[in-house]
Image (cartoon, rainbow, N blue to C red; front, side, top):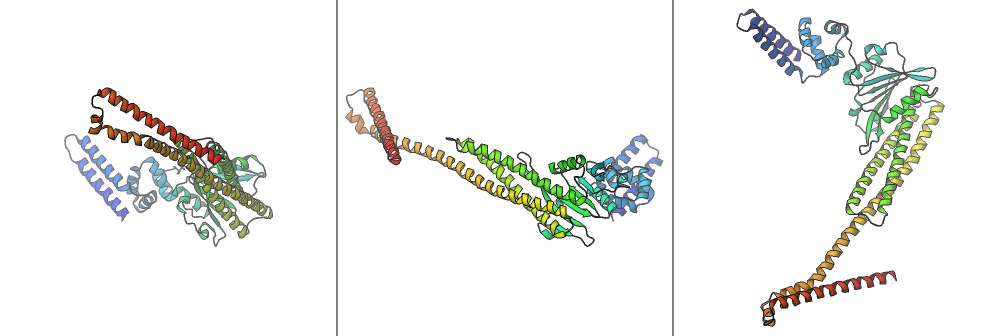
Amino acid sequence: MAADKVSELLKKQKRIESLVHNQSMPRQAMVETLVQRQHVAELHNLLSPWSASEIGTILESLPADEAMLLWAQLSAERQNDVLWEISDSLRALLADSREPAFNESQINAFVLVDGRLRQIAVEGRKSLEGLQPIWIDLLGASKAERNFVGLHFGLNFSDPDDVTDLEASSRYRIEENGDIHLHSNFLLDREGKSRSVPVSFVLHQGVLFTLRNQELPVFRLQRRRTLTQPGYVSDCTDVLLDLYGADVEYSADSLEDIYATLGEVGRQVLSEGITDREAAAILGDIAEEEDLNGRIRGNILDTQRAIHFLIRSKIMSTSQGEDARQILHNIESLNSHTSFLFDKINFLMDATIGFININQNRRINQLTVFGVVFTPINILAGMGGMSEFSMMTQGIPWPIAYGAFLGGAVLIGVITFLALKHLESRQTRGKRM
């Protein structure tokens, strides 16, 4: 259907261009240029909503001359995406010797050489020829790039961000051909922006495939270790276990940061007094650390489930099994720390809210004192506004009469205030005794 629409549009454009070219008219070149621009705009509007795979399918179904016309209307970036989707023969026709290249993604293959991993950047279709890697890391790979790598190794990769099912049967499974699929969340701790990044793992015929859409400190650390330490890994299972172990270490470092932050917050909360603005900032810090602590707990529990699955799958050697159990032991110790931090966070939260309540009670107490002090003054002011006061002060100059009245009101207010302070001090001494 789409191919027929494109073919019809191309044929229509060819007829119109031929008709305009054969006619003699003023400003012939300008007219031909305008007609060509109109045809290009029509093609772009038609192709814009279609994906690279859809355009590739259309190109495969068109005659050679129409396919070349359509190809010429694609931008260089879109041509590269479409090159992944078409056959070698059509690629040679349209792009000659040009090979599709990886755009913004970072795809690296790791080969075991003399007990040490060597990193090889995968930059095109020919980069994987003749390689025997034990680990291939796909960072930010597009669908076409994932399909190419999967086709080369006989696999079908999905976008790691699309796997959101929490069922263990979906996230950790063994296929009929023996392939092991795992989907885990890894911590990305950035100040104020901590989050969990989904990562897909596939163990296939001695090769570990990792798919993710964001760079992670755990992967940088693992690459550095495997490239610099001989004998650090011996096969793809070692790489997988070390990635999970590094994630637990990274979570432990983040917990240490939480301890440091809460220690500073605790010193502020337990000081003699804090203002409402300081209390609001403290509550923000506490909420941020609570979110990070909860994220760490969720991630290490996810790692714990993955390690248990690997142990049950019985694919590990004796030494790898010991490493897996050590990771589980580390996770258990981190669980106790996260529980303690939740309790500490709740305590600091309650203490901060308590200080806010104290500040509010202090302001209400001040308003109460002002209200009590001004109550007799208000009564006197009401009496001073009556006609009887003018009658009682008849014969006395009004500045003297009202001045004396004002002085009396101030004196009564002062006496009332001192009486309240004396009563409050007596109550305070009574509580101390």
